[in-house]
Every structure is written in structure tokens, then in C-alpha cells.
Amino acid sequence: MERTTTPLRVCTYWPTRQGPFFWEQADLGEIGDELAHFADLGGDLVRLLLPWETFQPSAERINTQALDTLGRLLDLAHEEHVRVLPVLFTGVLFGQRFLPRWALQLDPTARPFARTLSEGREQPHALVKNIYEARPLLDAQRRLITEVVGYFGEHPAIYAWDLSGNGLPAYVPPRTPEALVEWAALLRETAREAEEGRHPVWLTLPDAAASLPFLPWAWDLTREGLHVLVETYPHIYPFAADAPADFVRFTAHLWRATADAAPGVLVGVATAPNQEREHLLVLPAEDDATPPTTIRLPHESVQAHIWQTLFETLGQSDAPLLGNATFADVPPVLWETPPFDKAIRPRFMGLLADNGREKEAARLWRETRLAAEPTPLRPLDVDLEALRAEPHATLARWFRQFREGEI
Image (cartoon, rainbow, N blue to C red; front, side, top):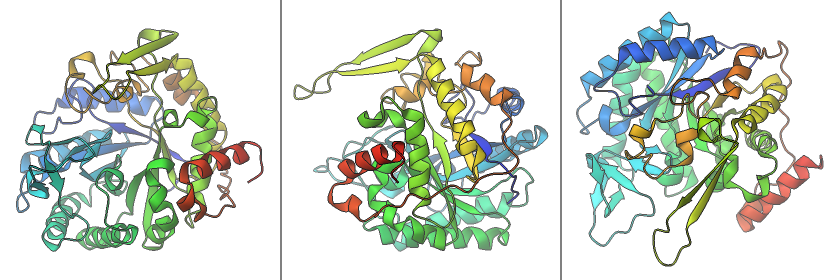
């Protein structure tokens, strides 16, 4: 892996007008223009979500049309001097599961805890098979890795490979944390065999709350040679409402305590559309037992302030990646399409508005030059096992202590 003296700046990318499921009808002109714009902002690296169902419609078959699109996109990225981090098993996107039918088991009595979609429709009674331990499913996953990594491993645009993204272990939980570690180690070794170890292998994990059961085992992941990228969404935490940038920093230092290397960090902050000072959305209750939900989207200057703080802190550290959750906002024409029919905030997390206008944070990306001499990210001095007894209270206490300089 090529390494610079500062974090590489990364965004999760899909063509704005098409959304994340574009692979069989890609607008290469739009993609080329947007990759050029991303490079002009100072971006180094894009995360490409490879929808598992699209790329592997059956356990034995790989979608050659999707592979062809990936190859063309890699060529376009290389032309703009942008590196690519493909996410191989994108089975979860913003809290919703998009999985191949062959990885599901239908049970009329089942009530899955997360929305599940497959073959273009919801599967309300679908249970996910044991993708981490069942031999037929492991063989299928290894087949996809062998095809994709083996074919594109020598492409100059490839930066690394990511085994999963957007919360797969949280929304498709393994039986035990050890099962997650063993699964990741097996697939990492498969990728290394497919391309003779040319590139490192990453695993993206959701931020602290969703990943509390896995934090004590994160060290085992890095001992297996995996690099960890942490997605963090400060709006989830009421105790971080007045200090979202500090919470992102806290998350990075907390995960550093679990491993012998600094994690990459990906942050998602939604902003009010149309440069409004504030935008309130009231979502109707899903049933009589729950109240309506109010979502407050702040002015885009809040997102810019967070990025200013992150560039001044994590941007000067040895964190290998520092990035934004999405490149551009989602246009209204896609708001009725999963996952954005349910995932409201991710519609507005981009550096660009859906019409291509640069938000304040985007201009900050272009203007900021990171330091040449990074400072090692300091691990927090905490007992990770304390998370087991009172996870959320412990997290809130540690965050307060972090802000006060006590840990």
C-alpha cells in the first residue's frame, strides 16, 4: 500500500443521479466528471460499494457485466489520479440489508430486526444464513473474492480491498466476535492468495455504539493483518450533540486503544438542503406505540466546522484514512428508492449538494493542506471490558473525560 505522510482523503462514491445500484446501467460520463471534481477537491481515494446481490446473483455465478463496469470505473479513476477501495460484500447500506436470495432463509414466523431486501423487494420473513461460519456460504464468498481480486489486483487504481462496509457485522451479527475475526482472517487470506498479497485488506466497522461487542476483539482483527476503517455518525449520540467533532476525535482515539495501528475514520454529518439555516423533518410514527420522529438538519457551516476541526487534529495524525460518508447529496428522484426511502440523514451527507454545488466543507477540502509530519494517534487509557456492564453509560462517561483531558 502506498503511504503518504498525511491521511488520505476519502469519500464513499456512487454516481449522484443513479445512486448506489448503478452497476448494470452505469453513466460513465457522469462518473468521469464526478471523479475529476473529487480530485479537484483534493480527494485521494473513493470507496466503491459493490452490492453483493448484484456482483454475485447466485453462489456459483459472478456478474460479468458488473465486473466490466468496475473495470471501466477503475480506468476512469486512474485517469484522474484517484485511488479506489472496493467494498467487496456490501450487504448493508444505512441500516438496511441488501442481500442475495441464496444467503437468506425464508421463515413465515420470522421477524427480522432489520429491514431486508432481495431481488428488488422487501423480504419481511427472511433470516440471514450464517455467512461467517457455514461452509457453503464461505465457499461462495471466497469465489467472489478470487474472481474480483484476482482479476483486478494488478490495476494501478486499486488502493486496497475492504471485506465489508456500512455496518455488516452490526446488522448481520456473527454468532460470536471470534467468528467475525476468523471470517475476516479467512477472507483476507483468500484475497492475498488471489493477488499474491499486493494490497492490504480492510474491514469497515460501524462506530462505537453499534460495535461495542466487537471493540475488545478489534485487536485480534489487526493481529490477523486487517486494517480497520471506522464509520462514525455523531448525531446518534445525545451526549455528543453539542460537540460532534470532538466525538469523531474520541472515536478515533478509542479505536486506537484496541489495536496496534491507528484506524481510518469516515464521518457522516447531514446538512440542511438549499443552504437553509436549519431544516426540520417530522416523520410519522410507524405504529401507535411510538411517537413521530423529528430530525433536525443544521446549516452546512456545521459540517464545515467539523471538518475544520478534524483537519486540525486527525488530519495531523497517523490515521491512514480520513473521509466523508458520501460524495454528494441524494437527488429527490431517488428518495423513494431504498435505502433512501427510510434513511433520511444519508440523503444530505455529501460534500456537494445534489445539483453539484459545493458545500462549505467541500471548499475547505480544496483549500486545506495537511501537515507533512503526522503525530501518532494517542490510544485512550481505558478498560474496554467496562463496556460490557454498562456500555452506553460508559461511553458517555469516557467522552466527557476525553473532552476534559482526563483520559
